[in-house]
Length: 218
Image 1 (tube, helix red, strand yellow):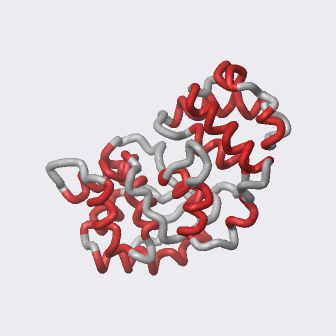
Image 2 (cartoon, rainbow, N blue to C red):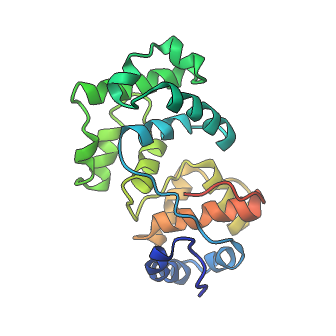
């Protein structure tokens, strides 16, 4: 087993999880042999990181970063109340699409009105967190799962709808067609309780092998 698989030396404890995944799915050995060290990409929990995840929905990393830079500069301090002082039109002027402007304001409203408490989510089970987050307009399964992985550091989350993960798994498994969300979920059952780790390996595999450009990973 590689000793340099993780960029963050504090994540070496995850090597047991890697062995678990390989034992149940030997195809992962091929991925692990060729990928560069896996970055942490962890983020703090809270309103600002969740808004950033919404911004990142279905756009390239470069586009998301450009839009985020304008939002972060304009909305100070970056709190729900401040964001709500920006109209949908002003948010669109900063680069958000109409839908994402609506989604960001919906999140800010939910928090301001007390319908959603992000701090309380840290103590709740994964499925309960998913249920709370997806009650907010514009937050679907993918957004909630990325928040669980990156911000709440949950270890058994599988974003089956993520396009990069679908493409990576198709390539690794030499599948004729891109797997559906249902098929992705079925594949991932054998990786429990380390599905987050499997996703991180596949994101790195997508970046290093499939896309050949190391700019994706969580």
